[in-house]
Length: 179
Image (tube, rainbow, N blue to C red):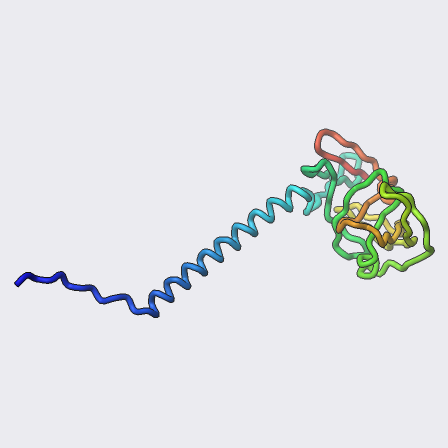
């Protein structure tokens, strides 16, 4: 009589299920970490100035140096009336333009109705006054602005009512603002 190979006991069903569950959890965690990592990289490309660095120049003036994003725009984080925002610097805009939602969060009162000319034609807006607009260590108070109901971007257009008080020097892919 020949000897039969000994059979190893089969893995219990509960162990196989646990093993499969742990594999799924590991894959989900790996995908989550990769998504987070690459989302951070994409955010850095669209807003390389999420942390705005400020310095004092040799003449004692406050300086903020911004990096251009991959689309050629200067985008940076800041605050309006203490509320965190993302600015899109727009030297072609007369003033600062904010959405109605931001106006409400920042406590910016809706003033007189106005009609403005935009690249998309005429649009209705409302005048307002911002108590504080801050970009890095550069802060200005009582900045004229407008609430733009049709603003189709999450960014605040940081126009000339803020920028005209600053010296701006663009060199290569950097923009230096001095107060």
